[in-house]
Image 1 (cartoon, rainbow, N blue to C red):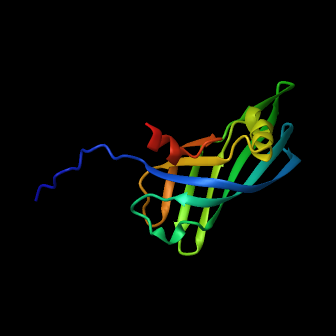
Image 2 (image 1 turned 60 degrees about the horizontal axis):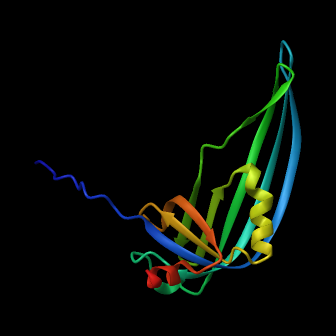
Length: 163
Protein backbone atom coordinates (compact mmCIF):
# COMPACT_ATOMS: atom_id res chain seq x y z
CA UNK A 1 0.00 0.00 0.00
CA UNK A 2 1.38 3.40 -0.97
CA UNK A 3 0.67 6.27 1.41
CA UNK A 4 0.32 9.79 0.12
CA UNK A 5 2.65 12.21 1.91
CA UNK A 6 1.23 15.48 3.14
CA UNK A 7 3.48 18.05 1.46
CA UNK A 8 1.54 21.15 2.55
CA UNK A 9 3.58 23.65 4.53
CA UNK A 10 2.00 23.91 7.95
CA UNK A 11 1.34 27.35 9.40
CA UNK A 12 2.84 27.68 12.90
CA UNK A 13 0.54 27.75 15.92
CA UNK A 14 0.31 31.13 17.66
CA UNK A 15 -0.13 31.80 21.37
CA UNK A 16 -0.49 35.34 22.71
CA UNK A 17 0.22 36.11 26.35
CA UNK A 18 -0.31 39.29 28.38
CA UNK A 19 2.42 39.93 30.95
CA UNK A 20 1.20 40.17 34.57
CA UNK A 21 4.41 39.96 36.62
CA UNK A 22 7.96 38.62 36.60
CA UNK A 23 10.65 37.48 38.99
CA UNK A 24 14.26 36.62 38.33
CA UNK A 25 17.02 34.54 39.85
CA UNK A 26 20.72 34.09 39.15
CA UNK A 27 22.98 31.19 40.10
CA UNK A 28 26.71 30.65 39.55
CA UNK A 29 28.91 27.74 40.59
CA UNK A 30 32.44 26.46 40.17
CA UNK A 31 33.10 22.78 39.52
CA UNK A 32 36.67 21.52 39.42
CA UNK A 33 37.03 17.90 38.42
CA UNK A 34 40.36 16.21 39.17
CA UNK A 35 41.75 14.48 36.11
CA UNK A 36 44.71 12.11 35.87
CA UNK A 37 46.86 14.58 34.03
CA UNK A 38 45.45 17.96 35.06
CA UNK A 39 42.70 19.76 36.90
CA UNK A 40 39.69 20.46 34.68
CA UNK A 41 38.23 23.73 35.93
CA UNK A 42 34.64 24.50 35.00
CA UNK A 43 32.15 27.11 36.09
CA UNK A 44 28.55 27.58 35.16
CA UNK A 45 25.93 30.25 35.54
CA UNK A 46 22.19 30.31 35.03
CA UNK A 47 19.78 33.23 34.84
CA UNK A 48 16.03 32.55 35.02
CA UNK A 49 13.31 35.11 34.31
CA UNK A 50 9.92 33.64 35.30
CA UNK A 51 7.12 35.62 33.65
CA UNK A 52 3.55 35.16 34.85
CA UNK A 53 1.15 35.82 31.98
CA UNK A 54 -2.53 35.61 31.09
CA UNK A 55 -3.40 33.64 27.95
CA UNK A 56 -5.36 35.81 25.51
CA UNK A 57 -5.07 33.62 22.38
CA UNK A 58 -4.39 29.91 21.92
CA UNK A 59 -3.94 27.90 18.72
CA UNK A 60 -7.25 26.82 17.15
CA UNK A 61 -6.46 23.16 17.76
CA UNK A 62 -6.17 23.64 21.53
CA UNK A 63 -9.06 23.76 23.97
CA UNK A 64 -10.44 27.23 24.71
CA UNK A 65 -10.39 26.24 28.41
CA UNK A 66 -6.91 27.79 28.55
CA UNK A 67 -8.11 31.30 27.57
CA UNK A 68 -7.89 33.77 30.45
CA UNK A 69 -5.81 31.36 32.56
CA UNK A 70 -2.30 32.02 33.83
CA UNK A 71 0.75 30.61 32.08
CA UNK A 72 4.33 30.81 33.36
CA UNK A 73 6.97 31.38 30.71
CA UNK A 74 10.56 30.90 31.90
CA UNK A 75 13.31 32.59 29.90
CA UNK A 76 16.73 31.09 30.63
CA UNK A 77 20.29 32.02 29.94
CA UNK A 78 22.77 29.33 30.95
CA UNK A 79 26.46 28.98 30.21
CA UNK A 80 29.28 26.70 31.16
CA UNK A 81 32.77 28.09 31.19
CA UNK A 82 35.72 25.71 30.83
CA UNK A 83 39.35 26.64 31.33
CA UNK A 84 41.47 25.79 28.29
CA UNK A 85 44.85 27.33 27.61
CA UNK A 86 44.31 30.03 30.22
CA UNK A 87 41.10 31.30 28.56
CA UNK A 88 37.51 30.69 29.55
CA UNK A 89 35.21 29.79 26.69
CA UNK A 90 31.42 29.75 26.67
CA UNK A 91 29.34 26.78 25.59
CA UNK A 92 26.03 27.74 23.99
CA UNK A 93 22.77 25.86 24.51
CA UNK A 94 21.42 23.96 21.51
CA UNK A 95 17.85 23.82 22.88
CA UNK A 96 15.52 26.75 22.18
CA UNK A 97 12.21 26.06 23.90
CA UNK A 98 8.80 24.40 24.26
CA UNK A 99 5.27 25.33 25.28
CA UNK A 100 2.95 23.03 27.22
CA UNK A 101 -0.84 23.22 27.51
CA UNK A 102 -2.12 20.04 29.12
CA UNK A 103 -4.98 19.79 31.57
CA UNK A 104 -4.37 22.41 34.26
CA UNK A 105 -0.69 22.79 33.29
CA UNK A 106 0.21 25.83 31.18
CA UNK A 107 3.89 26.72 30.88
CA UNK A 108 6.78 27.41 28.57
CA UNK A 109 10.55 27.50 28.68
CA UNK A 110 13.04 29.07 26.27
CA UNK A 111 16.66 30.16 26.12
CA UNK A 112 17.52 33.80 25.44
CA UNK A 113 20.85 35.39 24.46
CA UNK A 114 23.05 36.17 27.44
CA UNK A 115 23.75 39.71 26.28
CA UNK A 116 20.02 40.62 26.30
CA UNK A 117 18.88 39.03 29.57
CA UNK A 118 19.10 42.10 31.83
CA UNK A 119 17.64 44.44 29.20
CA UNK A 120 14.64 42.17 28.60
CA UNK A 121 13.92 42.03 32.33
CA UNK A 122 14.14 45.84 32.68
CA UNK A 123 11.81 46.35 29.70
CA UNK A 124 9.24 43.96 31.16
CA UNK A 125 9.44 45.56 34.63
CA UNK A 126 9.00 49.06 33.17
CA UNK A 127 6.01 47.86 31.05
CA UNK A 128 7.73 48.53 27.73
CA UNK A 129 7.04 44.89 26.88
CA UNK A 130 3.44 44.01 27.80
CA UNK A 131 2.65 41.14 25.42
CA UNK A 132 4.40 38.00 24.25
CA UNK A 133 3.59 36.31 20.95
CA UNK A 134 4.90 32.76 20.73
CA UNK A 135 4.92 30.83 17.45
CA UNK A 136 5.15 27.09 17.88
CA UNK A 137 5.38 23.99 15.77
CA UNK A 138 2.00 22.26 15.65
CA UNK A 139 0.99 21.15 19.11
CA UNK A 140 0.91 17.41 19.66
CA UNK A 141 -0.58 16.09 22.88
CA UNK A 142 -0.35 19.55 24.43
CA UNK A 143 3.32 20.18 23.56
CA UNK A 144 4.78 22.45 20.88
CA UNK A 145 8.37 23.41 20.07
CA UNK A 146 8.91 27.18 20.06
CA UNK A 147 9.93 28.63 16.70
CA UNK A 148 10.19 32.23 17.89
CA UNK A 149 9.16 34.65 20.63
CA UNK A 150 8.13 38.26 20.04
CA UNK A 151 7.89 40.64 23.00
CA UNK A 152 6.00 43.87 22.30
CA UNK A 153 4.29 46.88 23.79
CA UNK A 154 1.17 46.41 21.64
CA UNK A 155 -1.21 43.46 21.63
CA UNK A 156 -0.43 41.50 18.42
CA UNK A 157 -4.17 40.79 17.99
CA UNK A 158 -4.77 44.55 17.56
CA UNK A 159 -2.02 44.71 14.93
CA UNK A 160 -3.72 41.99 12.86
CA UNK A 161 -7.04 43.90 12.93
CA UNK A 162 -5.38 47.15 11.74
CA UNK A 163 -3.74 45.54 8.70
